[in-house]
Length: 430
Ligand SMILES: [Zn+2]
Image (cartoon, rainbow, N blue to C red; front, side, top):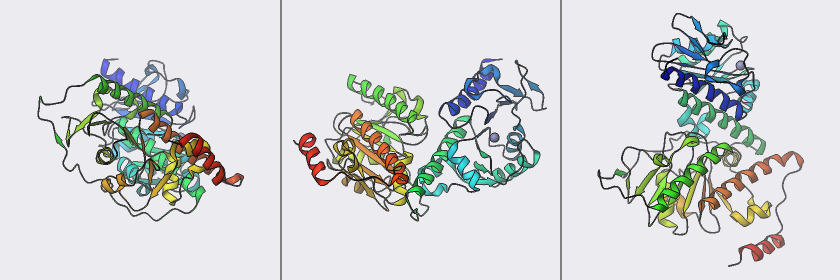
């Protein structure tokens, strides 16, 4: 196997293993394939434990249908719909089929998650379709799936089965798959809370007004503090992804340097594997050449401009917090000492687009409200240090989850005014 093919086979094995490791499929459910530039398809094998795959397990299917496997494996028994997708849409080069719990819930209910409810997710996923039930591995099922991709859908719910998602690369397919599952989780959590608000389908961003690149050679030098901050951002981005606080394609972390300068995670790069050099420095409306900052950069800049005490901003699509956004319900942070002491308040902002109305959103933050839930757009968290912002993000999401989980056991009770005053006097007195 040459180096390029080995890399591809490795990517297929690692992606499948990663999906299993993050609880998004069972050890036997799910399969992945990728098409290479010579027309070969590299697919996961049939009947092999998805948690322990290596590149040697990956099977190659030639354009003529010959199967090459060093271990004598057959390709996935559901290969027929992979092939049908590639034949129908030549722009698609990677397919992920898996059984993630929230999307399977939609599949069992015969419904499709409404991607337009969360514009950041819709931007990654495109549109979603529905393939009616046909028995697994059949040509009938392949036809139903192919009809959906022909209609332009990249993400498909397979009735009483699971999901299949495709992309022009395996990375893109994975990003769509993960975002699609997150959308399903948010909607399920939101429906536990109450009725969903009626959100209009608005695009969440309009280009990058006013952000120019540095003149070549005029980049500011990297001082020790910046080098350390870049490493910290990469470390926290990876940890946030591991705990579903950021997605591989959605969410951003930034850290202020001196004055109004800051560094921010890039757009279009997997947040799990960022390196210090992937981050983007923004100085006085100029950015580093050749790399794009996350779409939220303008909001981060406005927050730093208006709040000298803030040194870290995190924007997130965390699935329990966003459920509160979809229903227009406040995350009652005054239900636990940890929440109250760390955050004081989480405020909801309705009918506002934080990527466009950044100045207005930034103005709503204060020492008493360091965290904003911009309804169906994002959770925005700030802190004096990166660890403080990260803790606030975690505590907000954990509280949101506990509030939802407490509903079947009679719901959460807020701390009394007397207890809040005690906490204030003990922990928040200046
Ligand atoms: Zn399946």
